Length: 556
Ligand code: ATP
Ligand code: MG
Image 1: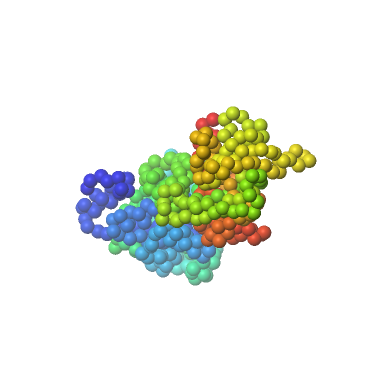
Image 2: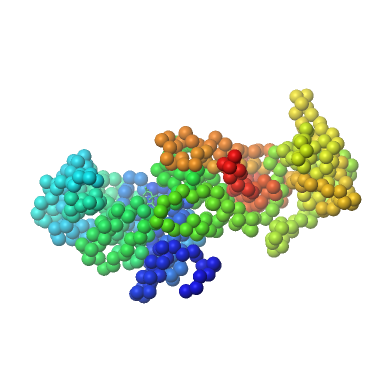
């Protein structure tokens, strides 16, 4: 095969699958196995893109399987949210499965292990189990219950299922080797008692399989060929293989591990993300500051940007922290192409153009996108009274300030050049209004006499603009590694959300659809929120700034 830059970059998993396929012609079957105990985050996106991407690339398929073996924290709300997020990312699963679909089969396999002398019921309490396990340097000790007969084990296991025992009283353990160097092989638990209501199987079960036992069998039952998981499962691989070898399952998938995604300034732990929601540091799982797929979506991230990001960071065997600027750049690139331009003045100040005829309006014909004529044109009304950005005016301007200042000239984007003639202040000395004159010969970029006007600023017509709310979102944490801090909520960025309620946008934005993205000229990329604010005004969320402002801060 020849190298082609349009193909996905090579990584060790692709290479391994290629060599597997060279040896035998099978179709590649993968799965994405989330636990429905929270919303998916950007780290999951890496796993989704890998699993679905590999399956598509090798013309196989990928299943979505919910690993619902721990009923305490699982919920249908999460199941639905996860399905929605995977679809939104652009992927289609072949089979939709739940580990709980296999509870009966998993139980039968456990009986088979007992019958073969490979599993036993152990009565040690959790504390004793820990003490018997040994340590990294010391071998463990055999449980006194290890020698139970097959008949006794079968009896006790069926009574565990029947609900005769309390939680923690007994577990089913694999009989492997208490002296194994790998602690995961020291007679790991296969089943525990939990008198808990399950979101799908209700109260039918009071024993639940452990992840390490359920996962490999679920993979085998679905004929998964490559079970791709994160590095923390590397030490569990011998157990994965032991279960399948001992049971002689019809298929034996191979587990391949890769490095988890960790992003700076970001938390990718479901438990901590849940805490942010429960303690109301954010509004919900889909708060636009959350690194969840739903949060990124609401923030205005296109699915293409997230897929592009996952492709760019690649797949490795080594943990590394990725600069969140890489993700933000993917959004910038996708939106630069996708988003029509519009004008919105975030912090407006009124400008009266004294020599412009009162009551007159000009319709300026402007392109919606500078490079994509297919996105059409619109008419932008211009008149005597406009708003400009407060920051684009400076009363005592330094030499390098090329925007509006007393006596200085600036260009209004798409319109005329104006010169500031008067500054009106209130009794406290605050500037309330500016007066300007305009040069009628400067329409659309020219100056009659060849003089240079360096600055260009955005504006909207007072009469033809609408009041909007603009939410300026920034990184949720102000430390590069919040997950490593003792108390990560102490490191929340107090300026992660600034809501502006006096902004003014082109009137055409009043009927934009929810989630429609725009580049507000000079201000950044924004998207329309699904809901208006309490005052009935449209709300626009800032997806990302036009440039990476944090890179500048960090280099200082
Ligand atoms: P936990 O199991 O502690 O609830 P988890 O993050 O492992 O959290 P799962 O729902 O089990 O959540 O994850 C589903 C899949 O996504 C797993 O295969 C897991 O390896 C993968 N995954 C989770 N977090 C990341 C990450 N940060 N980077 C890459 N893959 C991830
Ligand atoms: Mg997990």
